[in-house]
Length: 305
Length: 263
Image (tube, rainbow over all chains, first blue to last red; front, side, top):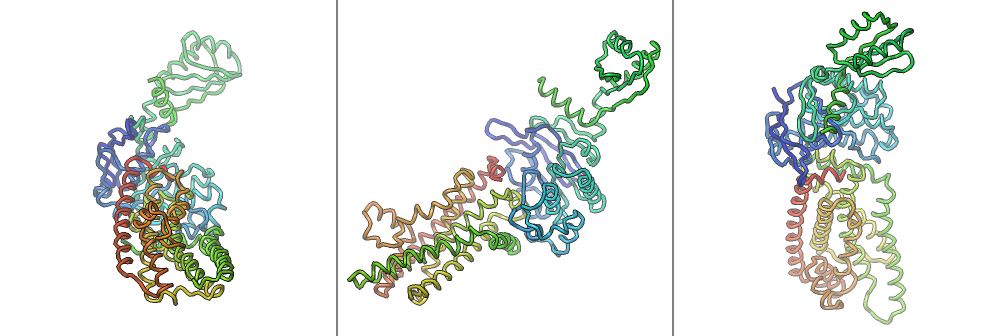
């Protein structure tokens, strides 16, 4: 069942088109990544889905209900956290969370918040003023607020931007557990491609307001034909360089290491050529393309165009 | 309208009150200094004047009644701006909270703070000048207060609408608007003492009628209730227009992406 349906969504600010006729769905219990360079239209899309910005055209249905006509009912079951949104800094941690517990009309919000602040390791900080928290602690507080109403749909705009690796891991596991146990649907943006690959079931790639790719993270990386072969030569480095030059490979070398950019399917041919020339390497690493490579390729294409 | 959501916003602003020295000053400090300085000055002039005219009741009455306009307007506008300073405005409007609930909450906070100020000023004026506004105006208090409160709410909503339209850069108007209105509202002097062109502006301001009637009660113990009913109708007209203006500016802000930029 689709929790979120977006059809032909367009947002124009004067002559500038921030979101250009995009359509997508988010299923129950799915984590959908929204990726793209700065200015691609990710945040505008999220603002529209939260009712903060009006779309120029298009249709949004959340929980099978048209958004504009059912705003209150829908937002009660949604929540969000974004790197650019804070909480009142002169309120204590518990005061902020109680405020949002009441705003979302959460039953037993005090008990619910106590559990949440323990899960996000904020229990000892509950009586601290928000402005005395570190950026990592703040991010965890914002995430507590985002989970305060047990949302069916959660929009997370760079939720782990300021977190230590161990807390980022805790957050990712928490999100994955919520999705698994409570079928929460998550729309997720992040500039951490490894994180997106780890937690997203599917990724939509936006560029200049348009969807340029939609696939699983692995599916997107498979669209990159090139990989990197890292070879270490204790002897014959010069001969190896000459061979690569003759065959017009794209490579660079530093000390005893040669790094070759090559199409994945031609790796066997390269190794065969080295073997025929009796050039023995002491170590070899093949770096498969990642989501980051896909991201960079889209950006490069954008710049070239 | 959900009471729980309105309460959430009210309590959020009451939480920060005890730890905000500037807000304490707005509610207690500055109004009390005004009462003290004006009261002492007028007492001095009164004692050195041969007139039997009671300047002190007129001025103290004006000062206390003026706070009924100042406090709700300032709370409605500053608490709205406070959400922008805190980058919290998007959290509120991305929650189920409606515009009507949010504005109601701001009005409730404003009225709570206004009563705290008025009661503390009343105690101050009884102690310092033996003048009790509740005893002086008796049963006329509700209609006088209601007129001033509605006008104050209208000013607050008008300022918030301007902020939605022009952004946080015009936040100074939240403090300035009452100062702009005050000379025309006949707070401390009668309408008849003003130049004709100023009177033309004054008569379209509901507080003018309240302050005129306040003085009539103090000096002749009479009241022209029709003037206050006219002020009430004028107030309701302005309030309805301002609510429409706020709503229109809010929707325009959503349309042009200005709401997210306020954060």
